Each structure stands twice: as C-alpha cells, then as structure tokens.
Image (tube, rainbow, N blue to C red; front, side, top):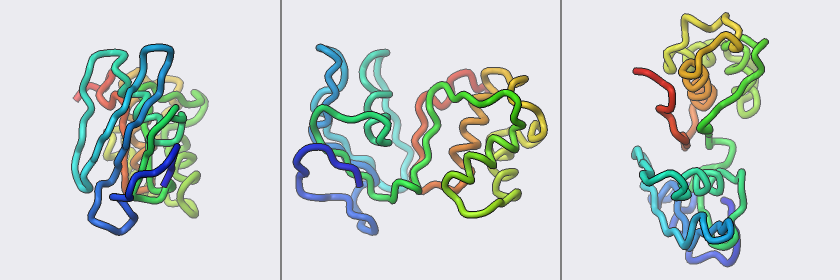
Length: 172
C-alpha cells in the first residue's frame, strides 16, 4: 500500500472485499493543470477505463497509482502487493538487439522467481506475438512494440494490470 499525506479510513485492505484501487483527494498540480482532488474506487475483478481529453490527467493518475510519480496531496491505496501489479506504459521501449522472448523473459525475471519459458511463450501468445518470439525487437513496428509491452505486463500473471493507452498503435 502506498500512501501520501494523511490516510482516510482504509477501505481496501489486502484480502478484503474492498476496492482493488482507491484514491482520496488525489492531486498533482503542474502549475494550474494536472490532476485535482480525485476520489476513485476501482472494484476488484473488473475492467475499468479512464476516459477524458488529452491533458486531463489520466496518465498522471496511473503514474501516481503505480508509484512512478508522487502526488502533491491525497492518498492512494492498492489492495494487492506491489510486486503483483503490472504496468504497460503508453509508449513502451525496449533494447532493439533483444528478441521478443528475451524482452519478456527479462521483464518476468524482475518479479518472478526462476526462468519459465512456458510463461514467457504464453504471454507472447496472449499478445499475438508467438510467431515473433525469436525476432529482434528493433525490427518491430509500433503496433508490435505495443503488443510486446502488453506481453511483458502479462508475463507474471499480475493481480492488477494497469495499461496506459493499451490500444495505441495496436491493430486487432
């Protein structure tokens, strides 16, 4: 659980039936623009989308929830251990000399114990990249790179999956 500023009464303790993610008065001010006083409850076991115009603060909020940015004030509660949270950023980037298999295997090794080729191949399959496992990612299109980011996020079977612009450049 990550917290910034005083915490309101907890509604999302691990193992409870509370929300998977909750924010209380979440604010990040970039000099008049940003994210202001957001209260959010994301139920467990659902797909939840944030919709709004460019500059509305969606990416900022996801970055604060994942711990990549800090809020100026407010509280974030995440009901799963941080190591069980996976993130796919809006523009994933990878070293071009690695193969798709190596990229996903490396991502998985950061949170999982041991090498598991089946898990890596399963994540590549889920992202539609099974046939590209041995290709160097420097040859990937923008859409394939987006799918590779998704495969990395799926590689360790996360309890909470956060996707920022998941369909950007990714054709069906």
